[in-house]
Amino acid sequence: MSEFQPLAPLALYDPFENMRFSMRNCFLCGAPTTPPQDTVPVFAEWLMTRYRLHERQIKLLDMSIAAYQDLRIACCPTCRTHHVEPLEARVELASREGTRGFRDLDEQTLFLWLGKMFYGVLVTELLNELDPLAKPQYPLAENAQLLRRFQAFYQPFQALRVPMEFEDFVPGSVFVLETDPAQDDMPFEYDDDLSTIAFSIKLDETVLVACLVDNGIIRQAMSRVYQDAYRPLHPVQVAEFKARVYYAAYLLNVVPDYYPRSVKPGDAEVVMDTLIDDITGDIFNPWDNSAYGQSLLEMWKRWQIPLTEILRDPAHPLTFLYDADGQPRYLSQYPEA
Ligand SMILES: [Zn+2]
Image 1 (cartoon, protein in one colour):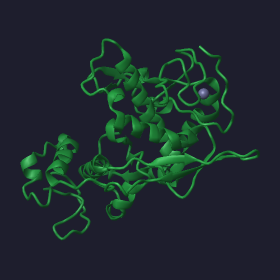
Image 2: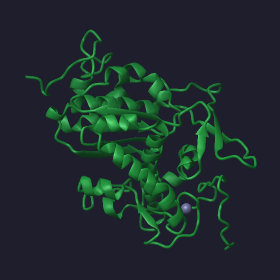
Image 3: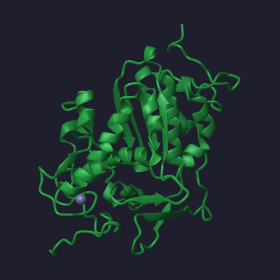
């Protein structure tokens, strides 16, 4: 094995080249690390403490179960103290202001913070697949298209370590929703769809929903729905919003390409350009109401709304965000009295 050369301050790193995932290389810079001390929790300590997650369990793709506290990724001391911990501290501080605090955070911070959790779960899944006893049904590492998507995500994600400016784009779509506290009894929720890089986490009344590798296309496509949803929502409405984002992420047919500009002496940051190839195909695959209905069914599991009711009118799947006239709907309780 060759001696590890520390990266130059603005040099980028790509763990997907040679698939360098292990507990012995820092997830941000590749420096050799020694587990278990050189690790950071995927879900930060402040999150686990506030929402009592340490012992709580999360189901992984191979159907194995892990405790939140056992989800950790390799991280060298420099990246931990200079990049990961300051990010967590910034978000923790903002979170004390509730939804307003999250909405006041800049887009890059939100993207990086959600991205760190997403990437931590992803790496856990990839490392699990390397375990000879694991028999995942759909191995992530063998799906070239998926890997391309993950690899694309990782490029702007390096802004966590390398000062980076995104030239005229945001790498992902992030939505900050708010639930109506009178109707809400779930302080914490988490779910993801690794294959589309869609992600959601709920912290008290704030629900963050994201697709992390779409250059903001879904946010643009959903700008009206987002605007209409910019008010305290019933959780069943939040679940519908999530179904729309997850389904849109599933339909997304493009993977952005990223091009870091070459660094000149004296540069203080990397400037990242991006390009989406929409010449050879459509940006979204066609919307299909019955498939979208499945997405609603999944998100509404808690309320046990059957598919027959969701698709009673096949041309207009059930909605709680809008009334029959297409106006934003106020829902004080569900089921309605
Ligand atoms: Zn590092």
